[in-house]
Amino acid sequence: MSLIARVARIGLLTAAAAAFLYWSSHHAEVSFADGLRYIREAQRIDRGDYAGGLLRATDHPVHPLAIAAAHRLLGGDPGPYDWQTAAQAAATAALVLAVVPLYLLGRDLFEDETTAWLGCLLVFSNPVIAYVGVNVLSESTFLLFWLWGLWASVRFLREGRFFWLPPAITFGALAYLTRPEGLLLHLALVATLLLLPLHRVTRIYWPRWRAAVALLVLGPAVLVGPYMALKGGPGTKPAVARVIGTLPESPPAALERERPLPPDQTAFQTYTIATVRAFKALRGAVTWPLIPLALVGLFVAGRGADRARTWLFLGVIVTASLAALVRLHATGGYCTVRHALVPGLVFILTAAYGLSWLIKNAVIDARKLGLGEGRFRPGPAVWAALIVALVAWPLYGTTTPFNSSFAAYRMAGYWIEHNPEADGRVLDLTDWSLYFSVKNGFGIGKVEEAAARPETRFVVVRDAHLNGHGRSSEIARELVANREPVARFPEHPAPRQIQVAIYDLTTPSAPVARKAENGATRR
Image (cartoon, rainbow, N blue to C red; front, side, top):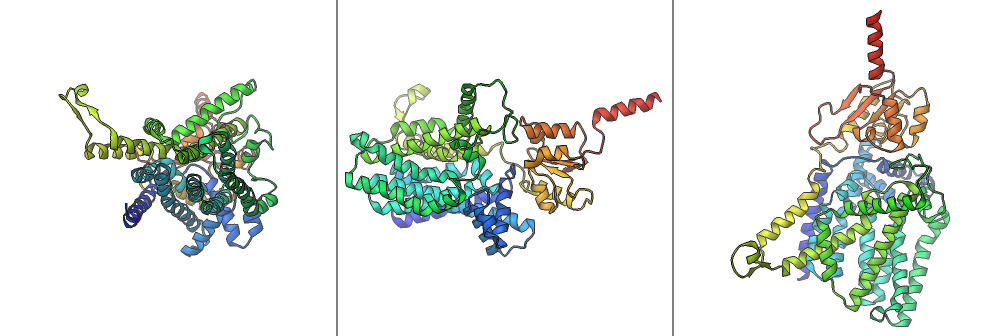
């Protein structure tokens, strides 16, 4: 394929990704408050509080910096709506730009142009990508740098040219400065080089090997070593510290746990459950229809020396990522689909390669289908229908009606803002309504404190919060206690549209109300 044709194809894929992300920003659910934390860090940076926004912040700095830059570029007002818009713009822009390294990675990983564009379609039709963008999570910016670093690493392992090591190290450092798992790129490259001498097929020239290892140790030390020294380790998030073992596991009834930890559960049971949960997260990141295609892709992948090094490298990344997911759930009690994005991307690209191979090589025996003698190849219409199904299937049942992503929380925020009795007396299990109201209150991290404070009056929740298994859901159910909400947003939701409810704790719960009525009747 000519360079002009390749650039045109990448341009079309970028435009398609931008259109899809714009559409999904109005059809995906806002579920977590993590994105709000990045916005607040970006606001501190914008005010000139660089120590608070960069060095003392919980999160790594690149994503908040991107949000602050987007807010400046868009000329936004200091209000919550413009900051939320800027955060979504930054997340969307990073994901759209990630199309370029994703295409190049798919092409060079399998030496196949069809795999490249199929991989882009399959990745961006995955609901987790829309989820990351809508919730303005740092995975959006992380993926941009991670994919560039992964592509440069693959080119180095295939060609052995030192030209590719500086970009691999630089983009790996940027990925780490976005999220702690970015450090895995450097560590996986070093581990791969250490494993290369163990098999003659993967060996490289010894002086070149020693120089590459030295560069991969010294480069990251120069680029991210000072930041790690200032932070006192690879990251300040408790989850990172628990995974690497510098902090003990979270308490059995910790708010972040998906379910409370049973007191009689053994370590073996804990890690068995964590392993199952990690593979469920990976399955969610890949989606069911792509799993058989990924197996086909793995089976038909080449076995040359350059490909052997590449697959050894990817194997290290996938193995280390899954081990970290198991540790995350075993020590913290949670593991979501977005945490499995790194290994998930590898399997999605492998599925794209498997589909590309089938398109070029699949032959169907007509006799087995009762269509007479001979063999035939499925035509373009058959493959086009399959591709459309693979793109559309993951989105079915996961999208919400138009303009529902932040609309419900904006309406709830407006209600809180104009209710003088709500200031400082609201518990919001995702923080977003408090953010839009610019009022004080209790967020998800202060659920237990809010439950213990007598002044807490209003609880902002969704049905998912009340039906959950974690400690925060248990507390929310106890507070609400079968009360009827005083407000719902929207009042009449469409099918699959999220609804935010506000409960007033000064109103009697349903059982109390019935008891009072019965007593009044007796009198």
